Length: 431
Image (cartoon, rainbow, N blue to C red; front, side, top):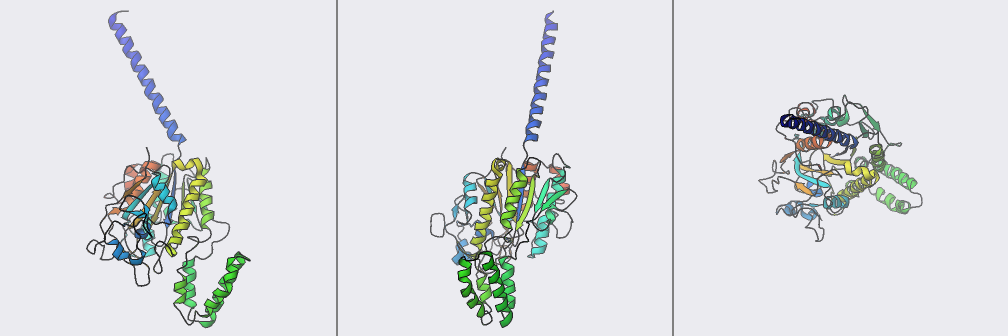
């Protein structure tokens, strides 16, 4: 064989070997991508969560003045927050989220808001879920549209909505399944408090309602502490008519379970669906009771009770997902925030910017992402709210692109139409 032919032979052999190696690597990459099944959980906190209470900016010099008796202090002090980054902390009732941050499995987004700038729960939730930036502009939700565009779509029942209804965010052309607790959830404490307050001026109805509620509670726990409290509760009910404000004060008791007693069942069910090898990859559920106009509380109180139950549910979700947790991202969002200052009824009113939490084993966490606007009078939105500096759609796009593999062009054109200025956040998920 001549030298020229030998060189050509070796060259062609090397090219063939290199090509085979590239093909092998591509095949392995496709196999790994197929084997990995990312899970995504969206939790909607209905009622407008107080972001300044959930992740207090204790390092802002104006925070303490605005929050007064409810202000949380630096970690390690009395009424101190859980540590984050030295400027922001976490509410002390959010222990699991604090552990997740330390384990680099939590990202906190602050001063975040959807495009909505009014203060209607109904319109705010519609904008949060439809993905268009305009209330009532679409009959489908951004997550449903994203499911239809994710790699491997269309796949029947890729998502599951847990609760009494399928929320707007999961409605649309992509086929999803739904699940609801076997027993209808009871009325939440907020609703009961409003009904009680409505009846408070009627001497007969106020007492009858209080008796019925107590009978129901005692029946649920015969012989327990509630039964021992029944007489005291009935005595308090006798005074309702004479003191109409008593019902509102009673509403300050911590709510045991956001969204009612079905919350724990929903968390268990969500974990069961996502654990299944052939089950859905996306789950959505919501909690209620975040509309804290009165008696919100600080380190302890009504809101602290809600935080504790929410936090416990997230810890349960992680425990029951087991090894699947490493491929899971959980995003907690709300329709808008609350006022920066405490109001006259020791609560907060409807506001604008708030927080979002992204937790999970697939999350590149241990960070607070915030372009902090400050809480000085000049910095507040309309002189009363935390100023929004991060569009929530940036976060949503980042999670959908990096975690579920939805193409950037699809996110811009069909999932979040008209959202061009809201560029996708990057680096949210582990490589």
